[in-house]
Amino acid sequence: MEILIATPTNFSFKRTVMSHGWYDLPPFEFDDQTQTLTRVIDLEGTRPVTVTVKEGKSAVVVAAARELGQRATERVVRDVRHMLRLDEDMTSFYEAVLRDPEFSWIAASGAGRMLRGATIFEDLVKMICTTNCSWALTDKMVNSLVDALGAPSPGGRRAFPTPESMASAPEQFYREVVRAGYRAPYLKELAELVASGSHNVEGWLSSDLPTSELMREMKKVKGVGTYAAENMLRLVGRYDGLALDSWVRAKFARTRNGGRKASDKKIERYYKRFGNWSGLAFWCDMTRDWLEEEEEQRKW
Image 1 (cartoon, helix red, strand yellow):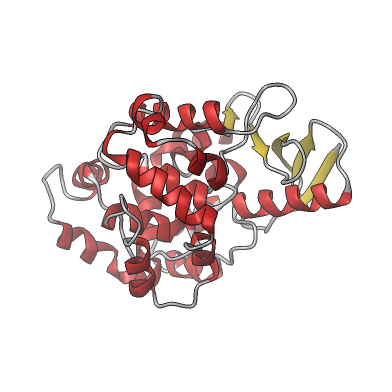
Image 2 (tube, one colour; image 1 turned 135 degrees about the vertical axis):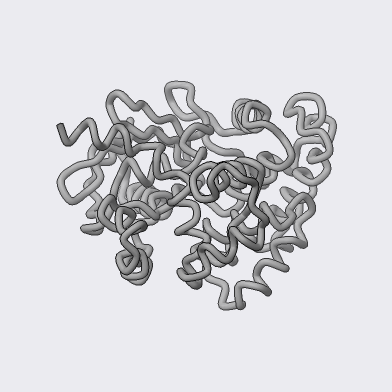
């Protein structure tokens, strides 16, 4: 069955999907040739469903692998809207970047929405798996988690593990199968806290706490430092922080500082003009070339 979900006029499907590395981690799969995002969605109470998402005219076209009832359809629509950030109002961000000729391309190309998982729990687990390691190791950890603990959909793909399924696995599993290293007890504890209801990470999405206080809440989770917290803030719609790491520092040096190493303070000052949107302007600036060459070729 197919479901059409209307998109905002300033929405770019590919810029959203490829906004950062989540599209390359399961349960996501992205086929660049067909421009198709595949995802397994957990339906709670019944088997997960595999869906594909493509860009349509003023909409995304979601195709489910089987017929769905009303409740399951509503769940799929809710999750797709959440993952693609379709309800996020980017108006003030685009107004801010349009005032600066060097950054006006962001609004023109519909950049700025950052792909996220179906739940904040999923994003948090993945974020912990990105800290202090290579992307190859992140990929290995997330694939191992999904393969071992994710509920299967017809066809063999698996959903992202629930907090309950992760909580049921022993710490040894995280050490020996996931190869999570020092993160092993952190992942186990996080899953237990969320599964028991004592830690409401989903509440971060609608929290009315000031960003600084919400960041402190995030950093109470073991394995979450400033880098991980500022990245998580982006995924809940807070863009104050830059989430600096070695890759973006080196990219800034090449693109904005004549190849010379820049202090974190200098990087912060450069994007301060964008106020509460500084972190998003920074990320768009650092990733501009990911799709720019391809977009130029399409014009011809």
